[in-house]
Amino acid sequence: MKKENIREIKPDDSLLSEKRNYFVGKVILHDISRVIDVEDQKVYYAGFRNGARTKVHYHEGGQILLVTKGKGILVLYKGSTKKQKFRIKPVTKILLKVGDMAYVPKHTLHWHGAIRKKNFSHIAFNSFTSSGKEAKTIWYDSDYLSFAMMIK
Image (tube, rainbow, N blue to C red; front, side, top):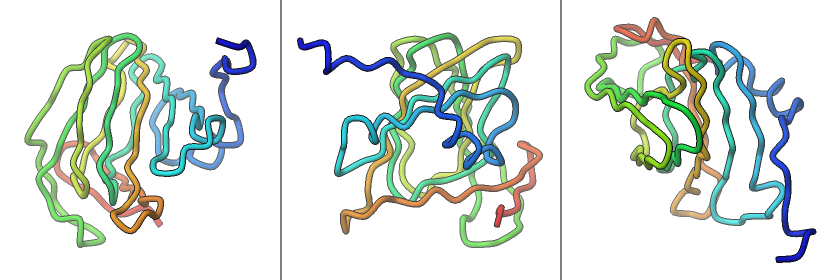
């Protein structure tokens, strides 16, 4: 393989400042799809330090998480994605470790991140919509147990 085909994953400070409100704790983000010019999905590297995690959210397309480091958790919720403010109920908690792959179906409320006092990283593959457009991610503020409100 030619050396120009190998890239180092570095923190993308502009991406992190754009998405900072969607995370709790220290996070490193890198938009891999910008580097490799993918046309049918978004590909991100996300590193979560010392229990950091995403806020509750869902994607308009499916998402695959491929764990690359540490131990983490994925929590799926039951609740409507149609309301601005509503009650949610965690229904599935999945512990993740290096080499695990998890699929989150489109419109499924969830969060993911590191276990407390642990570091965790994954590569996220976010599918485009069936019309070939980049799928939106809809973010919520939440107490992670029972309540969520859409972030505007």
